[in-house]
Image 1 (cartoon, rainbow, N blue to C red):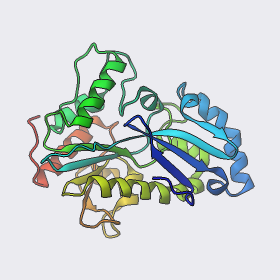
Image 2: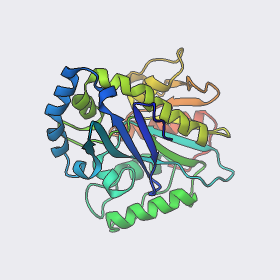
Image 3: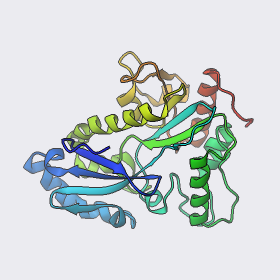
Image 4: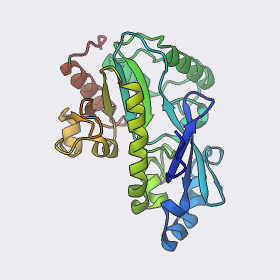
Length: 280
């Protein structure tokens, strides 16, 4: 969706797993102090990951970048399951697929040890495939719904700006460090609205949304749902509804870096919601 009055604008790329985004820095960073801090940090941020300079471009006061979103247009009789993560890893953007492996011919633990072993999705692929072939095959299967699962799976991020997968500029903390906490709060309104547009399009006939990150849960939950804590996430106690669409269930699980906890809680909350899962 492209809204010219918005601080954040975005549109679908020709590549089905990507969105092209732009942010007006005069709107995001309205004070001189904020803009000077951003300017002083931007080059270090870019240098924190070799792929950042392929993803980001700063031009005439607008920050352009590519982000991840994979929402299949195909439908069948399975209910939709939308998985909402924190922000993308820069190398995954460059490689063209969520949770792309860092090492060639290796599988990312999210596909193998979280989704597959939780009984959600069988898209962990054999060792030995190149990263390019692995990502291409996985993308094709997700777009055509060619997988063994009880759900149609959609993937999106709460924060659209990518960052490195490790180091001082990694994750959502790296984005906060780059633009500042006040700017991140300004941006959140538009990021949340983007996610809700995905929900409206994908979760039209039942289904559920699952968050894997603190800001995503707190930003999307209804007012009477519990605020995020890692202890509640670990016990499967983050359960509620979307504030903007209260008829849609919202579940919160531990972050993907906590592989065992994420797998266990994801399986637990979906089974208790009455969904049939594959055997572990």
